[in-house]
Every structure is written in structure tokens, then in C-alpha cells.
Length: 324
Image 1 (cartoon, one colour):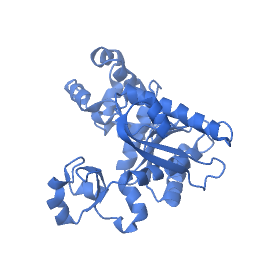
Image 2 (cartoon, rainbow, N blue to C red):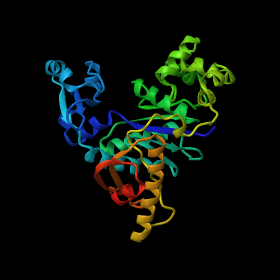
Image 3 (tube, one colour):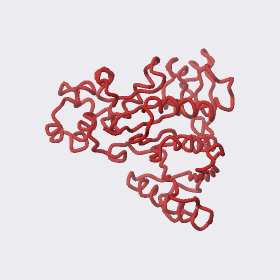
Image 4 (tube, helix red, strand yellow):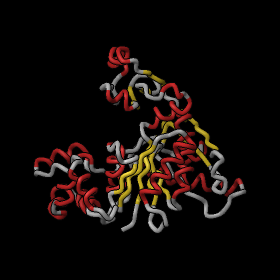
């Protein structure tokens, strides 16, 4: 079987703030939305105190005051810049990278000479050393298993931030799937999970053991494919089961060095068209456009990134292309 790695930055917005203010390490920290109205990110310490995700800040002030929670206004330009740097570093670990969101991407590890777990650990060390960001790595033969592996990696304090559900020893995979609620499976969601539990399917292992054809009749083809993915059979690309994204990225390496501005502009226009297709497919509009370009031959150099706030949300390709 092949090996896919899902690399995900831990509490990304908070981690970005800690890079530039180390005094925040170990303290409960929350990041608030643009108007300082809602909690959009929490450190593990703030989460442990019971600060809810998405809660209006005025409802949390008393709790925050009692426990010394630090509240920061969001800085999306900073997060976008560190995201571009993160993806440039991660891209060095595989010739095939699929950026999934601002803080996570898939890496195809098939055919690479290094043990996937060792590569994941080396990746974590380099990101921490070069950027100061903590990441976890989930590895599996399919996207669904890689996603679940990433969740296990975040939860397991003894796993060094890496979990491989495609390893030859099946005991790790069996234990992980048995310990994960069916709602944790990528693409299931709360409503499907409730219906599955009513059928006696309570864990990820139960779902893997269920009859795919029966589930197709009751839940559709996507759930059938998820069952096969849990069994190690590649059936899905990321867009088939993902919820609407808050961030859409279209990024690919060039096949050759680019030194002409017209070639670069043509590539940017192509990427915008791809991203806008995804945007319209989920019936969304964009408020921000970021463009970034990085040197492949000189990975120690930071990528260049620009961020532009649009005058009004849009899904118009021409406007997005002009902004990019």
C-alpha cells in the first residue's frame, strides 16, 4: 500500500502568535475574530479551562479573568505569511504536495526511501527548528486513514506527534480505530454519526466492518467509499467529503525555473481559476486574496507573500485574478 501523510499545525493561529512572543508559551491564549467578537483559536491551556470554540468573547471574560487567559486580536497577514513558509518547508519532504487548508497539507510518501514514521519525525523537527511551529503527522494508505492518524497523533502524548495507521503491525491500527468515535471519521459529521450509532455503528472500527452496499443504500455513495478507505482502498479525493472551507489554496511547483514575469502571471491566473472553481462549487465568496511564490532551489529563503483585502466579497474570477 502507498503512504499518505497529513501534516497539520497544532492550534495554528495561537502558535503563530507564540513564534513572535515566546512569553505566551505555556499560558492560556485565545485568538479573537476581526471585530474581537468570537473565539476563533485556543491554546491547549485555554481549551483545558473550558473556553468554548466560537463563543462570543463577552461570555468568556469572567472565566478568562479568573485564569489569566490572554486574548489577542487576529492577525491574518501574519498567519498567511507563516502558512506560506510552512508549506514551502513541508514541500521539501515530498515531490507531491496537496495543500488542503491554511495549516494542513497532504504529502505523498509512496516510493520514498525513508521509513514514513522517521520522515514524519524529521519533518516535525525541521518545522519546529526553522519556523517555531508545532505540527503533528498522520500517515495512512488513504486520506481517511491519514486524517484519523493525525487525530491520534494529537491525542497520544507518547507518540512523538506521529502516528502511522498503515504500518505493518495491525495492533496500532485496530486499537486506534476502536478508540475513535464514528463521528471523528472524516466526512461523517454529527448527523450521519447519530444515524450510524442508531444502527449500532459507534466507532471507526465498527464503520470499517459494516457492509458497504447496505450503507450505500441508506447513506449514499460517499459513506460507502469511506468504508473502503478505512479498509485501505483509495476511493476519495479530498474534495468529495470535505465541508465548505474557510481557506482555499491552489498551489503547485513549476516544472522548470521561472524567470519571466508573464509566465509567472499566467501561472497565478491558472491557480486563481482552479481556486475559484472550488469556491463556486461550495457556493462561497472570498474576502481576502493571498499570493505567494517561493524558491525551490534555495529552501532556506522565505517565500514572498502578499495579502489583499477585497472591497466586497466575490466569486468573480476576473476580480480575483486582478487581485492576485
